[in-house]
Each structure stands twice: as structure tokens, then as C-alpha cells.
Image (cartoon, rainbow, N blue to C red; front, side, top):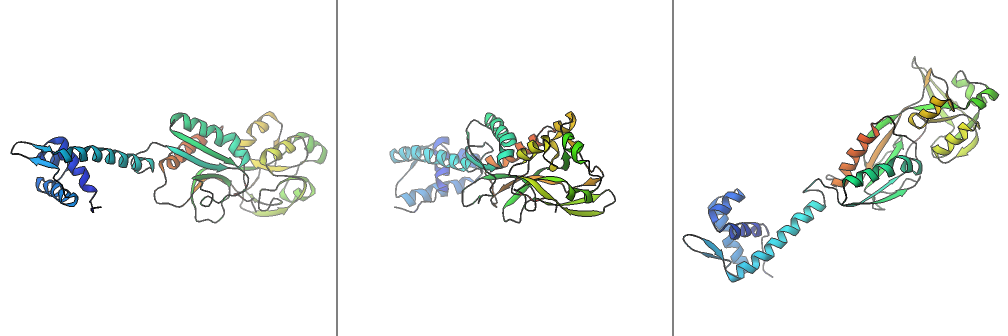
Length: 312
């Protein structure tokens, strides 16, 4: 096969369609001489005359007309291929393979993906809900949504929003065991521990004056999801630390009582994590922007996953 410079296909197609080297050159932003040179070199590479030149007009030869039809198809397919990888357009397409924790995935990510797909009907979604930290590159994920505190990683991460951690207990529990007044009181209380955390029984509190105090508690209940911890806390099984927006309604209705208001726990974050690449696909970039806007609404619930650790 002859060696052909594919850039010259676009030049030839423009001349064949315009019927003039001058008009084609103006359309392509080239000089007339350069346009003519590209076509001449293409004819030399192919070993065939593609254009018949007259003083008034340029028309394709029989071989040139057939070649022009092929060029048009090739150029259209090339433009479509560029658009599909996200470099030629901003329309999400293909399949977005995404993972999130079970709790957060069910309450936040799945509804968000549904709304995003309604805006982008050419997009398909492959969603995996798991509390395990998956290998995004090895398992070919486009994106992971992780809450809590990120571990060291070569992946890229975008912080979508922050959340506060609040120590809570049910009125029934507090009536029976009393209300803690300071962090030092917590080891004497029953505790609901979340096994997803790196240190589920060690917590670091900071006072308004900046004094830090770490406490070690004893678990009477161990659970593997934040929603299960919330359920046990509401039932009076013990104290627990939960994300603020997850328990807003519970605090407002009195099902849970916030404790130690003069002490703070470290804030957590919601992050979009994706493989390090210079040009992330449009489907990834646009869903991150969409989710950031959606999470900015005060009603969006939050849960921690295994991507995080506790305040210790």
C-alpha cells in the first residue's frame, strides 16, 4: 500500500466540494499554493490523478469522485471517534462505570445517576455498590465516589463537599445511662462501632479553645454500614458518631440528641476519585460537575465508606 498523509484527505475533499483551490484555501485557512501542493502530493502518493484542472473550475476525475466519497466517510468516522473519547465534544456517551459505598450509593449516587442520564440519553451506566476499596484501573472503573478521609493514592481526587461528624444518642439510652458531659466520660458508655473505619473505637475531640483529647471507647455493637449504626442508635443500643446531614431529621424530631456541643470532631469529605489521566472523558468530567452541584443542596444525605478513617 502507498504511504498516504491522511491530513491531505481533508484538503482534497475541500477542493472537490468547493470546485476551486482558492475557495478551498479560504475555507481551510491555507494559502492557495499550499492547498495545491497538498493535492499534488496526495496524487503522487496514490499514483492517480484525482482532479481535472481547467482555467475556470476544478472537477474530480472518475477515480477522484470515487475517492472523494471514501474520504467523506473516513473524515466523518474520524470526527465521531474523536467525539467518543471526549476530545471533540462535551456530550457524555458510552458507558460510565462507577462505584460507591452501599449506603451512599443507594441514597445519593443512584438517584444522581438517574437524573444525569435523563439529561444525557446516550449514556449508559454500570454501577457497582460495594464497601470495599476497588482497584479503579485494574477493574476498569471510570470513577469512584468515596466519603470520609482519602488514603494516599496516585489517583486523582476532586472534593465535592464536606460534612461534620456528630456524636449522638437516643433519648431512651440517655435516660438509662446518662448524658456524657465531656470526652473523658465516653469510655464508660456503650458504643456502636462502624467496622468500615480504620480506627472505629478511637476518637479525637477538639474544644472551642483548641484543646485536643483522644478517647478509646468499647463497642457493644459492631456494624458495617452507617445506616445500620443510625438504626441501632435510634433504638437506644448506644452512642455513635454519624454524618450531620444523615441525622438532620432525627435531631429535628428528637429521635437522636446531639452530644458534647462544645467539642468538635474532624470534618470529612465527599470525593470523586478517578484514574490519573491528562484528559478525563467528558462523561467523567460532566458527572463530577453535576454531582458537585447536586451535593451542594442542603438536603443531600451523607454516609462514610471504607475510603475514610475516623477522627483519630
